[in-house]
Image 1 (cartoon, rainbow, N blue to C red):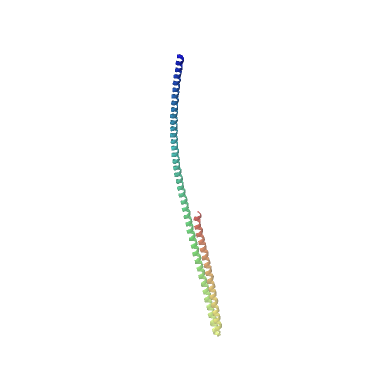
Image 2 (cartoon, helix red, strand yellow):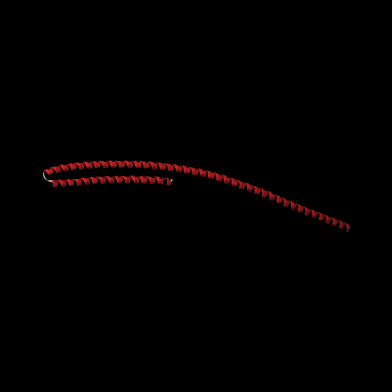
Length: 203
């Protein structure tokens, strides 16, 4: 009985020691596991924050580089477009000035030709008038000799009327031709100016 009691007591002691050791080991294992988890989570979070910082810094740097490149290209393109536009405007203005000079020169030539023709026609009309007056006066003198002054005066008035009507018709024809030429020249000048102005707007 005593031996059984001693054995049971020892068995209980051993069981108590084993359970205590087991609980201590479980506590140690759990504590070490929690420490390892905490350390691992801290390392993972620190690495994640480092990676996020690197990624964000790289993105910011790339955005800055891309913005700088895009802005530089945009400024270059704007400068090229403005230079081309200025060249086109200069060419259009030079062409407009040349066309205006050509139109004005042709207008002056036409005016000079019309004035010269008007003077020539006026000279011919006056010469015809003087000839007719001379003929009328000569016929008047002849008719005076035969005492036919009434017929001579009627013929003189008819000839003067005919000469004046011819002179007026010539002057009217010359003035109408001058006005038509001036209208054609001004219409061509306005068309050239409109074409020159519409050119820069289309560009």
